[in-house]
Image 1 (cartoon, rainbow over the protein chains, first blue to last red):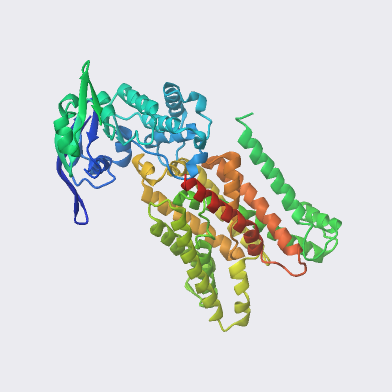
Image 2: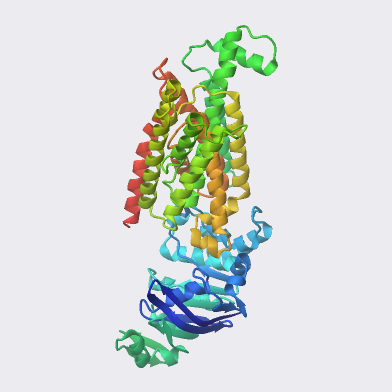
Length: 249
Length: 340
C-alpha cells in the first residue's frame, strides 16, 4: 500500500493549518509524524482518514481517497479511535471488537461464522480472550487501548492510522502498543508526542512545524539537537548508545 | 448459564408482562366482579353468549383495548428511547425530554383544530403528528451535531419542548370549540382513556415495524455506540443511518402520541434499567426494554385509573412522577463522571 499526499493545503477561516504538505507513506513501515502543538500533525492525519476533504491531494495507490467507496476504504485502512461516548461503557469487550468487521458486511446482514473466527483469533493474539465478556467500563486504560487495537486488527487492514495513541497511557502500555504495531503486518502512520518512542519504534519520521513538513528521514537523522531546536525551539540533549537514541529534556 | 442469561431475563419479563396485563383487566373505575371479567374473556375466546352484554362490552371494548394499548405504547416508547439514545450518543435522550413528543402533539392538535392535511383521506392526525415530531427531532439532532455533551442536548431539548408545548396550547386555545379546548389536558399530560381497537392496531403496526428494523439494523446500531466518527471510519454512511433512525423514531412517536397524548420518561427509565440488566448491545436491549416498558406503562395506567377512582389521573403525571427523579439522578451521575 502507498499513501501519497501532494501539495495539500488547508485553512479554517483565515487561519492556515497546512500549507503545501507533501508526503509519501509506503510499505510495511512505521511512520511517525512529530512536531509541536499546532504544527498540523493531527490535521494531516485527518486528511488521510477523510475526516477533512482532501480534494484530490491525497491518493491511496494512485486513487484519490474521495473516490474510494466507504467500505472499501475501511477494509484497507483502519483508524484507531479513542473511546469516549456514554453507552459503550456497558458494551462487552467482544461486542466492541466485533464492530471492526463492519466494513465487510452488507447493511442489514448479521456477522457470521467467519467474522467470529477472525474475532476469536485476534482476541487470543491480543490476550483479550479472558476479558471477552467484561463490560468495557470496568477495564483499565491499558486494556481499553488493547481493545481498540484489536478492533483495528479484526478489520484486517493494510494500514493503521493512529492519532496520539499513547496519550494518557502509562509507560508499560505505551511500549506494549508500540511493540504490537511493530508486529503488525502492514503500514502504520501515527502522530506522536513522545520523542523517545518515536526514536525507538518509528522507521521514518516526518517533522512538522507551522503547517509544513520541515524534514523527513530516519530517526537517527532527524532526532538531533539541531533539528529538534528548529522544530520545537528548545535545546535538548540527544544521547546515542549502541545505535539507540535517547532524548533528554 | 451465561449463554442463556438474556433468554431467561426476557422470558421472566414476558411472564411478568402477561401476568400484569391479565391482572390489570380486573382493575378499573367501574368495579367488576372477578367472575364477570372471566366470563367476558371466556366468551371472547370461545364464542357463545355473554351472560351480561353490558359487562362484556365494558371488558372487551373498553378495558381490554386499554390494557393492550398501554402494553404496546410502553414497548414503543421504550424502543424509541433506545433509538434516540443511540442516535445522539446520550443516555438522557428521550422523546418527551427532547420535545419530540411535544412536536407530535402540536401536529396532532393542529390537525384536529385547524384541519391540517385535510386532503388526506385517512390518518390525518397521525400524519400531522409525524410531521411535528420529525421537525422536532431533526432540529435536536442538527443542533447537537457531533457533540456528545449531555448539557447541550438537554438544554436544546428543553427549548424545543417548551416551544412545541406552547404551540400545542396556542392551537387548542385558539379553537372556538369548547370540547376541543377541554382536551388540552389530554394532549399535554397523556391519557389512555377512550382507547379503542383501531388505536391498538396502528400501535401494534408501529411496534412490529420497530422490532423488525431494530433486528435488521442491530449491527449498525451497535456500531453507532462507538460514536459517529468511529462509525464513519468503519464505512458506515452515518448521515443515511441518522435519517433512517430519525424517520423511524418520529413515526413511532407520532403514533403513540396520537393515541395517548404526552407520556414522558418511559423511554428514559426503562432502557436505563435494562442496560444494567442485559447490557448495551441492541439485540437484547430492545427485546428486554420492549417487555419491561409494556409492563411498566400498564402498571402505571392501572394506578392512574384506580387511585382516585372515579376521577382519572393523567398517566403522564404518573410516569413523570417516577421518571423525573430518575432523570435528575442520571444527570447527577453523568456530571460526576465527566469531572473525572
